[in-house]
Length: 344
Image 1 (cartoon, rainbow, N blue to C red):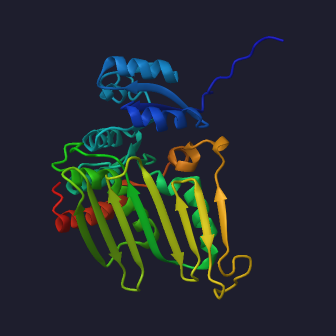
Image 2: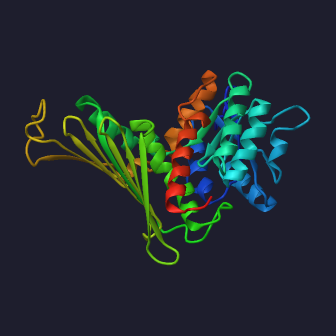
Image 3: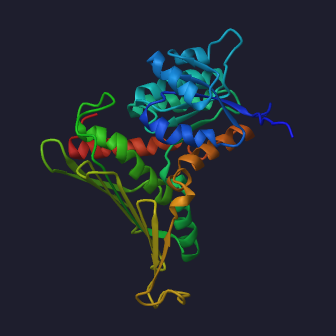
C-alpha cells in the first residue's frame, strides 16, 4: 500500500504569527498547530534568525523580520488572520494596521499600552470591514477547568462573591515600557484578574485598591470591587511567589462554593441547609482533578481561546473577547493606579 499524505486543504485559514517569543513557543504555537482548519503560513520576528527558526520548527512557508509585509504584499495580505504576542505597543500597532486591511487579529493581553490607545483601537474595530474579528487573548475564562467550574455552579443561582489570587515571581523590573514594577504587574496579572471579575459580575459601583510593598522589588496589590446589590469581588495580584499561582473561588446565592486551584483541581461544597442539598451535605466536598495525560493547552485555555477566535473568523464575527470589552478593564485599572500610586 503506498504512503499517503494529508494536506490542510483549500478551506484552511492562513495564519501568521507575529512575535514567536517564549510565550508563543510554549503556549500559542503548539495550540495553533492542532487547531482544526488552521494552517500556519507565516512567522514574523524582529530578529531574522528567530523568524526563520520558528517557521522551520512549526512548518510555516514564509518568514520575515517585518510583520507589515504580511499585510502589504503586492497581491494583498498573505494571511487571513494574525496571532500577535509581544508588547502592548506591538499589539496596538498590529491591530490598527490589520483591522484596516480586513485581517482578523488574535492579540495577547494587554492589547494596548494605555486606555487612550485602546479607545482608538475600539474605534478601528468598529470601522473594520465586515467579518473582521479582533480578539483579546484572556486564557483564564476559556480554560476547560474554569468552564467546568462555571457549569457546575450555574444551576445554583447567581454569583455573589468572587475571589481571585494571581501571584508570580515576576516582574521584578519594569517591562513593556511601564514606568514602575507595580504598573507592569497590573498590565501582566491585573488585567487577567479584573477581566475575570467583570465577565462574571459586571462593572462595579465602587473600587478600592491597596498596595503592600514586600521589599524594594516585590509588591502585593489588593483590589475590592463592590456592587450596589451586595456582591463583592476581591482580587490579589503580586510578584512575591517563586512561580505562577492561580486560585479562584466563586460563591453562589445558594451558598454553593467552587474553588479552582492552579487550573488542576476543582473542589465544590455546599451547606447542608442550602436549597436542593443532597449529595453534598454538611462537610462533604466534591473534588475533580484533571489527569496529566489530557495535556494542558485546553485546561489552561490557550487551545480553547484560539478555537473561539477561529470560530468567530469562520462565521464572520463577532468574537466573545472583543477589544471593546477591555475598555472597562482598563478603566478599573486606571482607578487602581490612582489609588496605589502605580504610575502608567
